[in-house]
Length: 104
Image (cartoon, rainbow, N blue to C red; front, side, top):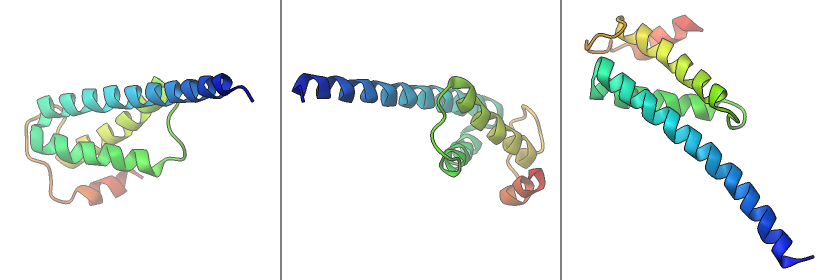
C-alpha cells in the first residue's frame, strides 16, 4: 500500500474529527455565554456540566450543527425549569435533578 494514501485517509478522518470538535466548542461556548448573561456564572458552570452530561448520554457524536443545537435546546429547557425564570438573574433552585425528571 502506498504510504501517502494512508496519510491522506488519516488526514481526512482527522479533518472530520476537527470539524466535530469545532462545532462542539462553538455550541458549548455560545450556550455558556448565553446562560452567563441570563443567570450568572454559577448557573453557567452548572449548565455546562449538564450540557456535557447530555453529550455523554447520546449514542454517537452529533454530525451537524442542528444536532449540536438539539443538545443545547434540551439543556436550556432544563435550565429554565430549574431556575423557575426565563432570562432572570435569579439563583437556581437546589433541587435541580427533581425538576429535570419532571421534564421527562
